[in-house]
Picture 1 (cartoon, each protein chain N blue to C red):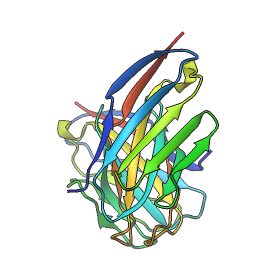
Picture 2 (picture 1 turned 45 degrees about the vertical axis):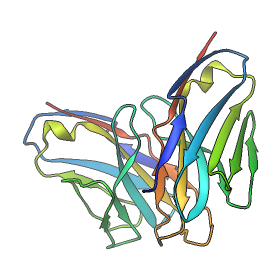
Picture 3 (picture 1 turned 180 degrees about the vertical axis):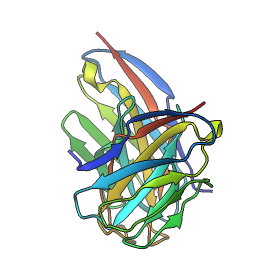
Length: 114
Length: 117
């Protein structure tokens, strides 16, 4: 069964600190892995997309890593800001269908305190 | 920022009413999607479309229906709303993508928060 598991479920950090969010998946055949940021009451916004040939990708203070062998990914946030408070969703795409089906994790709820 | 719009943003409606959630995109994307998301839970695909006159059901069974008469417009309709339909509904669109490791960006609208009383 194709699944995406994220940890921790929630995280509280102080402004200026770094944090790392984890994602494990069982989706096969693997096509790509993406991280989305979803603010409360809004739609998800893409942060990074990685294919199986990429093992790291950065977008400003966000750096995603991918280990396709162990089927794990992480999202590292550097020098956190209050605006980073949101849910971070790991999404894995398969290449076993023409649709390019996406499988969503439940997200990690990050709260940044001043 | 993605050019994909949803209306209304919030809707509170009584049981048995017919409702239509609107979704429009100005990016010329062929593929469009409807997702349902409950608080703290993952997004579930309920409908998708490859293009005009194409509609398919997604992974999660839904009593809603969709239509795709124009490329830019993908409305979702509930003929008779029930409290179990209370949820957030997210519309998305993407460029033509496919297999073989090709990645494609999927753009989401802001969502419609539906409450059925």
